[in-house]
Image (cartoon, rainbow, N blue to C red; front, side, top):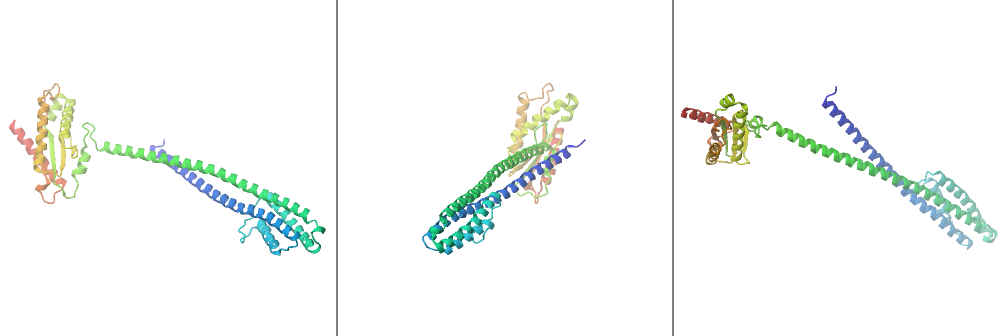
Length: 358
């Protein structure tokens, strides 16, 4: 059977293939769009010049009938017709690869040659002795047919562009949806990972940072630059409670004490469960007096808890703890490890004194 990593890799691979396919499709559509837009622009000039052919020829015929020869205009029409057929860099004309248009343009070009011969007859014999009027009318009709064919070709390209636009919108929307989905999944995974990371460093029983998180903070090798204190707490008699009343009672002792120290130490300061019955607090930007006030406040809170029915139900056992602290201002070039070791030592001294007093 495939494991979860294989399934994730396969899913990721499919997503990348889909994303790549969308991007390639988008690129191809854009290329087609640009090509068709360029073709439409070229077609527009062809339609324009095809219309010029009709108007300029009509003017030429009128001039010839009036005995006003204009060989320059005739030469200009030759140039336009040649450009319409094969393209022209001078006139910025492109060749339209449309069968119907090319056939009509060929017919027009051939008839233009006949019309030019008739114009020569007009110059030699006069308009009255030629068929210039009838031939020009036929020529104008052929010119209109050529213009219509060019316009139809332009409309075909415009329709293609519209279809490409629709596909472009669909592909772009698909990409946006895909990316939004990817972002959504990334945010979800980031939250899941963040939650998992938090859980990895949280003691589930007390809700406080666990030993791994405590060690991450307490084992830093950098020298402390801000006055920092470390307070170690150790529950007294926890083993006896577990042996006598069971681990449920012992767990209640731990949880109640964890709640007390967390509530009575400023929220921005670190409090964690360092071991089974040990807790640690790291107080930054502090003084000896501040630390002693925190310790006194917690002692008072424990006394109040014991006095107002806070003893472990059915056992008559009160909360009891030993503590010790150390502050970085008492040492030069001090690290967290330094004050941790000293706080731990002072906590055991306090525990020893409490045992001697019993």
